[in-house]
Image (cartoon, rainbow, N blue to C red; front, side, top):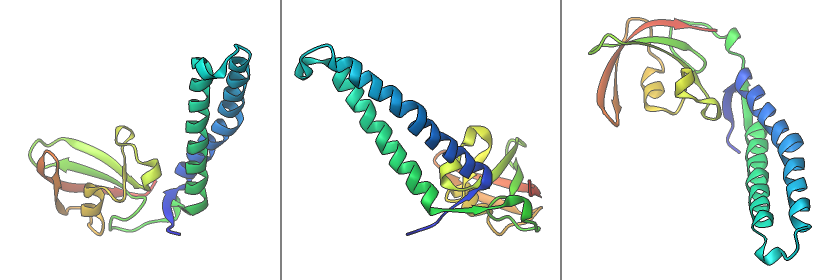
Length: 157
């Protein structure tokens, strides 16, 4: 069984979602199924079939979240340090073409969210950054073409 690296915050977020699915969504869906059953013939009852579909999706999500938690390898980023980029690092990059400044934290796949500035360790950008230090120039091939970045800062938060 392959371990999934993640930060403590990512682990907590998955735990929270799991509790929500189990303690809020599951009873709500069960109630919907119970209510839909009272409407008569189940073979032509759209509410019943929709609720059963929701139940299937929710149970699948619960199984997925439980699997991620079971395989999680929680890495405490606050105890990490160093000059080179590795898992958990918060990196400030400057696009060499546009001078646009971006800040990314390298995290595990389950907690990656580009809109929040967290990229997966398996992403092309993160793979290109691993092992680099402040001042390094990194070229990354993206779907939009090759991009060049300069590493301005490496932090551990």
